[in-house]
Length: 93
Image 1 (cartoon, rainbow, N blue to C red):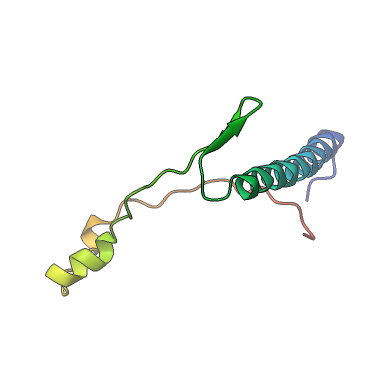
Image 2: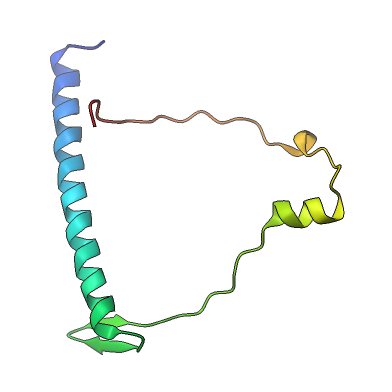
């Protein structure tokens, strides 16, 4: 466990920034939801903001597709190497 001043300053900065980010994200999501609600099912715009409905093709379930043509195929030889990455979290949340 680190209890030095440098870690304390960095941890405080992280917690403060995370709180500000979470609050901004909530405000952003609420404003976006309000615009989408006001637009209904139509494309709308005003005051330099637009809501446009776009269609997107559905994604392909490649695992299901592969299982349908080669149900006994062992895919482990095709697995990429594992990765290691940092996870930063606030304890107690």
